[in-house]
Image (cartoon, rainbow, N blue to C red; front, top):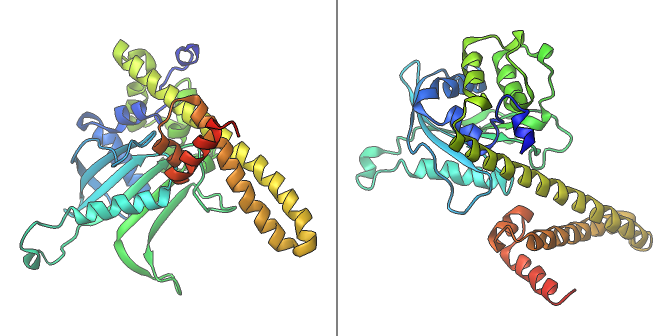
Length: 324
């Protein structure tokens, strides 16, 4: 992997890089500094504890690292944070599931009356690398700070459950445009592996430590191998995602054209809607066939990647076996 040897710093959005930088007590000052910038003054974390250090969900998620943290604020408040470097499959539902689990796990096994639902604050923080926020439309926000609010007037209904999504594809600032430490963190998260050193725009003790930690040449041989595997996995996931998007785009365009032709007889909007739906099905079927041919993924993993049911994958597999 010659590309790796030309890179002075590791890619900290890989599973290995993310765990190395943010996943240990030794370097928790880096994670605290990053989280405090994300909260933008709303919370100031003084200390944190890794509850499980690292765990994954109930399924074999592809490209997922999760940190379960108990944080102590500078005013003594304690709250729970889950930080994820995650894939995009069923993103919103997955984060809702994880947050509900963090809440339900707080309930004691007995004496609920005395406990009286004294639930700690819970925050889910998601680093989205290489893909857009689902259903974001034309919005180009790189930070999505979300809480429960009233639909009619926007007033906050419940402020102790929050979601922060970091959409790195929308962070496009150059070094000279970095105006605060949040900008600096997002810049190094996105660009670390392509940088040659610490510039004047990043000259702060916390970033000096980060750059020293992320030097590829300082990794032990076994660490380099783990990083290389992690980087290959990231590249594979990006290739799959890119291929899926291109196939879906082509299938959608073809079906839309056919739908428009049909729509001239039955109404343009109805024909276009039908074409779009058919395009989605055709495109996903092609993606599934390609994933099956790769022999790298299980049926359930393919279903997650293509965002379809296991039954649909099995149907495509059966059709493929018949030569259709």
